[in-house]
View 1 (cartoon, rainbow, N blue to C red):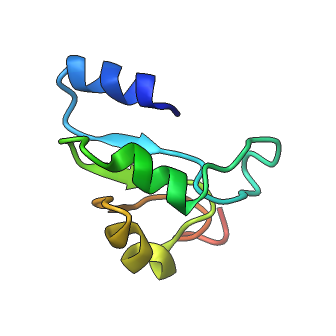
View 2 (cartoon, rainbow, N blue to C red):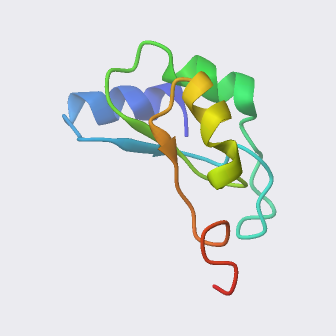
View 3 (spheres, helix red, strand yellow):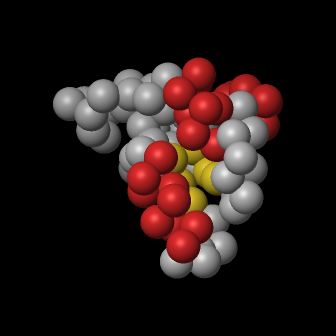
Length: 82
């Protein structure tokens, strides 16, 4: 995900976006994580709800809010047996 993709999402008038991966994740082990600072930079000034994915779960909600995100989403973090 990139600033260009967020700009495109805004042009498309989407209701929300997901931004990922924030941290390393088992689901996509080869994906380069954005990191919290880059996620916050991308979110800054974006006027749609952003949900963070990738290596995040309920324990990172506060950090996500502090980065400007609406919240976190995922599969394994919420349903470990998945």
